[in-house]
Image 1 (tube, one colour):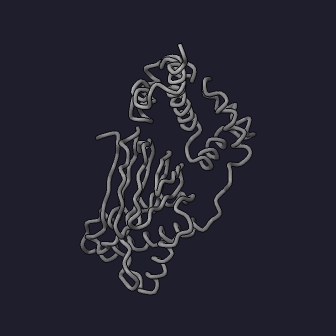
Image 2 (cartoon, helix red, strand yellow; image 1 turned 180 degrees about the vertical axis):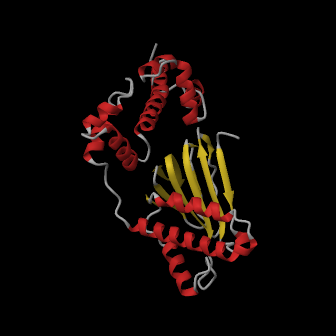
Image 3 (tube, rainbow, N blue to C red; image 1 turned 90 degrees about the vertical axis):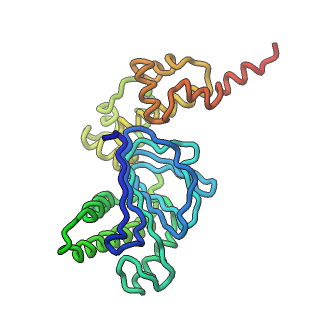
Length: 300
């Protein structure tokens, strides 16, 4: 089986054609860029369980962290810009929204219209979700695989109930005020770690800076930041490496050691996992960097 786990279903056979697709991927490394596309009449709800992901809609960038929800409305063109689909776990649900009075998830017309109006008028397209979203979406996958004809009516009811519960949760989360920043303990720990990117990872020391036990620190960091602290650090190192590759003439090996990698080979492996290319390829694609350009433009 490929390390890039991906699956998707529709619920048409369960009499729920409005659920055009429920998809899920678990990327162990970065995947190809998500090309610009739109869903005519379709509302797409993405739930990023783990990792980080970029989306671009109407020229605006949206960066998701683990636990975030992202919504694109019917007909909106969206993509991941120039960024690959990053390492992480994501669910997406595409719903075909009917006209007023149309059938929707087996709801009575008035209830269906109320839910559809709430979805069409979400106040934000990006917001923090709920941990139970993962359980609900996994339940939809599991129930959709039932094959007992005698239980078909009950299975359809369960699917309807879970979907409605999930969508009500999305509407609720979109109304919540967004937290303006991480808590003070996590900010202190993050600054401590970011200031030591070239050193061995010291999560125990970071936990002490946050005045938390190590297990509590790891859990709280993931809850607030969206990814575990070790992965956050790795991402910070790769972002720093990208900047140095573009803006300096340092060799790939120098950059690798400056950022705490044990070898240039391991650095290249990790870099490719997050960017889908080797450091040398990245530098070539983005040019030789501003430092090189400045050097070449000097009068001789």
